[in-house]
Image 1 (cartoon, rainbow, N blue to C red):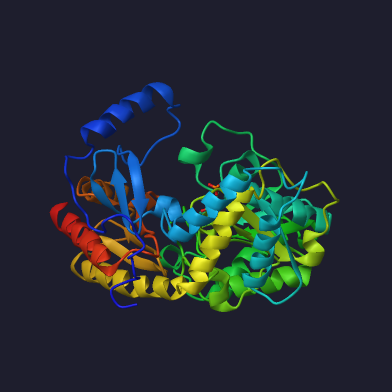
Image 2: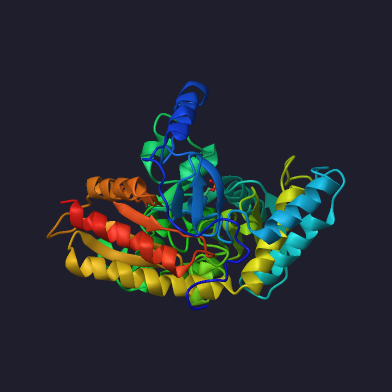
Length: 449
Ligand code: PMP
């Protein structure tokens, strides 16, 4: 796919174009209304309101064309108005919007479960349950693991992010903005050190895993542990790729001790990292895998998929919810999955990696405030540090992001230290837009001192 995917189905002109200063007058008006109507706790990255989006472009309320390097936080991998998703949703919404799968079930839910059972790592017998958000699915994975093992404890890692509900806040590492003032949090969640080669200097994943396992055995005891929950590449914590061997060693230890190994692939799943699922890169087969975000072309849907015997541990009626596996979201998921498979979006994610990493490496070669370029596929980042060392520099990350925003490039920050610029373009973005976006970012690094 030289030059990127064929975008003739995309209705929006794939070009960055600013027709007002950002934010424009219409966005300013809407922001004033937001301020008086929406709770302050709900922040926004940019003070710019969206009117349309697809391919690699978000059009704002004033008609500005912005380059999308965020995908609504890794969601719209197939585009934000993918024609197949739009057609499937339109057909389903006209047929029926909801009956509740727990009342009168429908085939879309079953078809999504079949697709997930087929596509997720491992050829064993699997079952799936559907939910609405990533956090809700993570909570259900913990419920299922507890029901299966009869044990209580859950292990999570430094820099982890698993959501904002009460149990998942206990599992999420970072205090501000997520946890501050919101406790007390659910008990029996234990945090151990993970693998962060850039900062801990341990490049042998087996060594990092042995350290974590020692901590678990000393402080919790394998016989008390229901589940180990881990992001194969940590997302909100800073796009941290563990040292090779770390995930396989943890998975093997879990298997030996009867601990359920749960891969939280909410952010990494569905082609984002240049594999359909990030676990595949090292051949790790999780007992349970949690998916959301990229699964359904922008509609809210999440899933827990895993070994049939573990998934079947909860009693009938023990899993569910009014909206879980909503028929419109399921129709969107089937269309998104077909797009990923038929349009070769796993390969496209790898092409994006090649292009973007070359651009980021070129910036790093001239600027030692980029401590590391990392990530896989279309989940890439730079960790920003003070010149001459490795002290995190969140101010520079914020300033570069702001400069990009001002030029019409949507870019997000993340990281425990707030010093990581992350890049999550839709997989349907074209090369020309990527080049334009990274020209803007390179210029921002040159201008801001
Ligand atoms: N797990 C991971 C790894 C995530 O990145 C996220 C969202 N950023 C969640 C869970 C929570 O998903 P949601 O916001 O849909 O609840």
